[in-house]
Image 1 (tube, rainbow, N blue to C red):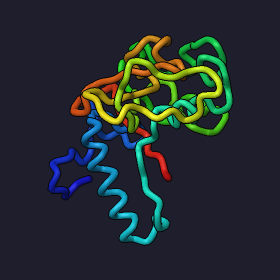
Image 2 (image 1 turned 90 degrees about the vertical axis):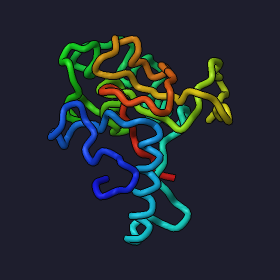
Image 3 (image 1 turned 90 degrees about the horizontal axis):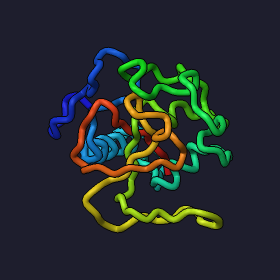
Length: 182
């Protein structure tokens, strides 16, 4: 995102010059600017089908992708070990994407490495149980949701269902994002 008028850092990271690591040090607001510019660039280049766009997933979409058809606390099972994900400040920073096994649907680092912003506002009561299908979040709020745990958080925070909220202007070394497509 160099050469932009929005003052986005062209390579945000607490550990720069690691092109295979997740982006971090980006706020939810930064991600919205990035997505707007990405969509405009891809449409102009003819690579984005009409009516489609790059987005942040909703938190329910994020959890669905994270679970990848599983029902356990983590996509690989009920317990966590350091061979499964980057967490608990053991390594002390992010790691290259793909260092840990992908979930059953081929997504890497849904658990650990960096928390991931979602499209939704945070609200305290999140629906659960069957047949909850793609619940919609609150229409407004003061906090945005992120999911997935991070390199810094303990293992219980990496559970597929773990959710947390923070100000959309927050930038830290353990929050990043994952782009969706709709």
